[in-house]
Length: 430
Ligand code: ATP
Ligand code: MG
Ligand code: MG
Ligand code: MG
Image 1: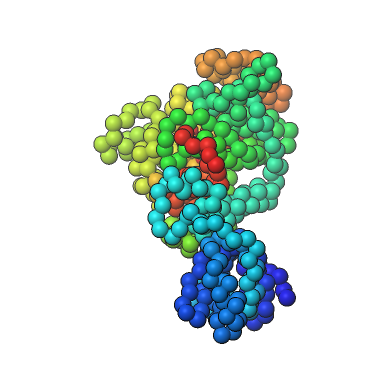
Image 2: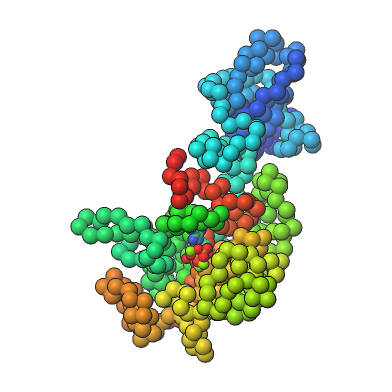
């Protein structure tokens, strides 16, 4: 008999196959069992008729509990009403392991309960769909950058200093000194860009975010490209093309998953480069017109970002932020040094900032000035300063948060569902 997966089932129409998986759901009438089986690659409905399989097997299946592991044999039948397009006419079922009473049922569970059972919750069609889309976004990311001549370079996780401010640092002992979990691989990518031209890192980053929001995790994955000889404008174009590409890939490969998530496809189909832009100055004016209590020089909160993004159908770049609210490595606009050549990309539908990017400072003098203004420890940053001494070039880069992007593409209310085992302010279990 042919051993296959549900994902591949279309190839076996009319044939008898064997599937290995779990019993997701069992409904029975007196003479027929409807078994919903999942195997990780998909879900399929199997129909077992008492008169066909005999009383003994039929009664054995009746005892099988939800999430029991099972081997199922049956004939594949095309069925347009079935979600997968196919049904299985079951000839045999073998129990591999009988599951205890399964704690997650079809009824509504509270968030804490689901999070406590995250190791089981992951099996649901909705969570499986999210993980599949996350996987597509990762693969599409790698494909996009490799097609465009980038090299993947890994950044260290243990670092001697902070990249994105000291308030969200995780500190740990490093023999007789201190180390910090990486908040961003960017500074290392700048070094790598001077070695390899176009590079990116993609790894976990850590921030001790002390406020509870729907868009901040403590541990999240960031994609950080860095490019030598690329200036502000070209950096934005690469971001637009990148985001357009990964959304297209999800639309192409995850139709089924987007349907499980009930995602409004028109919201994604319109995501095509170029994206609109608004300067920070104009964004402040807009917020003031809308009655927000904000003045030039303030950073945006989540509600501000939502109001700005609502004005547009696509992601929007907010450009030229005040220098004093952005990181020390961002290049001040030579025409107007009180703002930097930086842009945040805000996702539509209230998902907030998904990318932060900028041209970096390439002048040694200017960098030293900024390092002093920010009181950064010189010894920890000496290697970074060195980069401006040996063949410095204009260069730019950005960081895209994978989980924010998953939340937006999937249309989720909260970032906790975007990563298999989320780390949050009040949660590190399981
Ligand atoms: P925010 O303003 O939302 O706190 P940030 O400006 O601190 O974000 P950056 O340092 O610019 O974030 O990091 C780049 C990207 O990483 C962000 O645009 C976002 O997509 C993602 N990101 C940042 N912090 C988090 C977090 N705590 N959880 C998940 N993603 C994050
Ligand atoms: Mg932040
Ligand atoms: Mg920000
Ligand atoms: Mg940012």
